[in-house]
Length: 285
Length: 325
Image 1 (cartoon, chains in turn yellow, blue):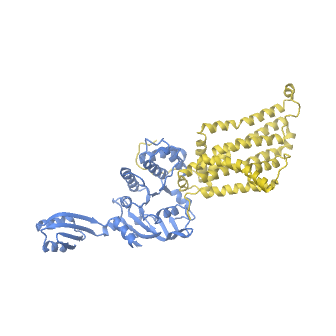
Image 2 (tube, chains in turn red, yellow):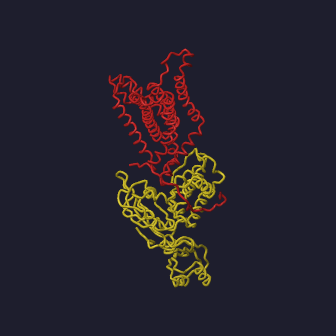
Image 3 (cartoon, chains in turn yellow, green):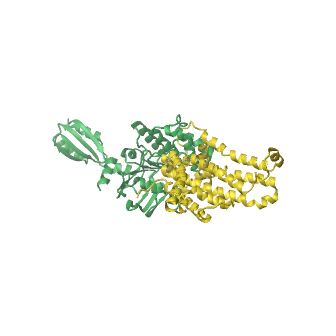
């Protein structure tokens, strides 16, 4: 390495393709995230429940062992309810992981005005958002639909072809329910961190949106004697959609289609807020 | 707007720097206007800038930074157009950004990253392969004088060091145009000297053209061969500094004892304009007349020169004239 040369030297070598630039951001952001031992530890904890599920699937197919343990037949059944529960638990972990990891993606760039340095290069705002959100998307995928599909494949291999064909839709439900949750969490976390620019506050705000949103929804329902308050409760909307996707028979106050629309509106608003803040310089009109 | 050098001229300090007229246009503006809400920041700018190193001058709020940000595609022109290296800022901004290195005025860093990682990442975002970006990040940091501190986190850097890191990230990918927005902001005199020396070195290396935006006249005078002065969003003056210096009058103020009409006459015979008030004389030197000629005339006539003050139009004079116009 010619670091002893102290004069400026032009560059005329090969350049990487334009499409690969957002991977640079992904690589650096991910490396930066996993510098935190706490986050790495929590990421490992996120795999405990999938491991437990794996064990349950294994046990469900070892009838003799269950009989020896005195567990009645049918107590451990691997069906849509099982995968719905898996998704509910992993959804909570995904939310907590986002609250820790999400705000640290954009706020350091905004806190010290680094955005002009990104955008003075052949690199667009859309690529920036894509690069940053892909970190969360891949991180959350690793604890939601990827282990979900692995569990489904394990169950399919143990249960046989007929179970697989009749329950194939569960695999689709796992992917779709995970993706919508990942989209909501990623966009919400990045939008909040873009607006407050302070990592800790952005994390607290994300927790606030979820918990205070639920409280606010209950208050509106109680005061106005309506069910419309649930539209402020993102977790409730998500559960409504998951119930429909996993065909779990539970009563919900708002129709599934409206829950879908509300979630998509949340995504659109978050994206709009994000794109408004992610620019080289803010224009003061 | 006055333009004394749009035709291009031999500029800079050395013969090696090619005439500006031989260089392709750096920036072409045609009725460029930028408006934020009701406020018109840039008002119908029209000029072709060709210099190797161009200084953007103007008082605070004149539109210097807005012009730079428009050339980088951060702001959309509300009317007119601008081209950088022939590429339109409205439609070909990605190509422009591929050729540009930018050092912004304000803080721009990621506090938890080390300088070398930061500059490497910026290099990669500009299109350098990772190994090359790492190599050039080290080189750029050595070049700007941050070799010893390159593994430290940027949050721990002093203001002067942060300025140097901004310069390093701007040159790491070998751009064709280096845009420097107030590069000496907040620097102490010695750090300012170092920064100016580096900018001169880059300029004289001939690999990059420079646009330097500053409200410090010394910075522009030291590093630029052309100057564009903005006032209230309009071009107040655009000229080649060397031409300007050559064309400008040189003034001489004397305090002389024993001078009589003969001494004044002799000076006027040389083609100088002279005004006498008791022992004080003010004169405008003619072309080819040097101070030693005045000394010679004084010695021949036994005139005792007690004080001599020589000055010529500086960039400050040019700037003040532009502001008054």
